[in-house]
Length: 203
Ligand SMILES: [Zn+2]
Image 1 (cartoon, rainbow, N blue to C red):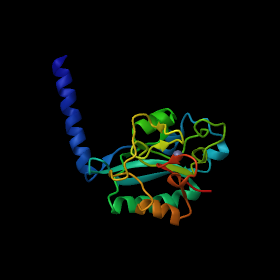
Image 2: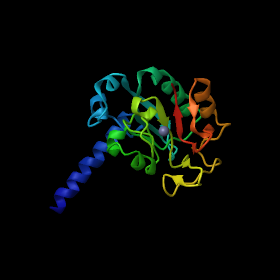
Image 3: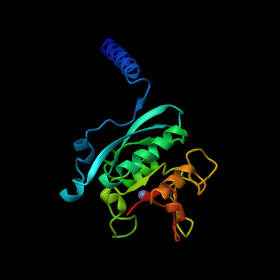
Image 4: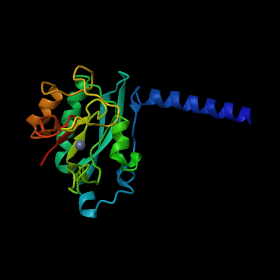
């Protein structure tokens, strides 16, 4: 039994070493097919048909190059690609990008894990209104570093705090924020009532 475990671990180790060489040292955070990435979503077919899967590369909080994925609306795919080119070139740290299916479509689980994502068929937290995420026209980046701060001072996700000096955190002079705005997106850090520092969306 012990030997079996040892040999399994050895095979796994060799496999992981070889695959990391093959992928030129890019760490794969997500490698789903489109069908896998939208599986179990309750979204209607007309919305699913508007979506596409985008592969993105970024330097994560470990300073290593990672590859992840975002499910976005086809209308914003080229913007998202352009923004992630900038994210990669200036090495703005993005913790991880894993489609929401892996979090069972739970926004709070994804935020708690500091995961960046887009499509999630859901309403706006605390309301009955459909979110821009439901159409893949909103992107959340590093939610644990860039939390929501409500007017009463309550912070979401739990345990997060907003420190604009921390790498991976947005403020109005950040080049990624500027790029989103230049491309016609809204930034949640500019919302009048509450602040949603990780959130960007487009009409
Ligand atoms: Zn959002």
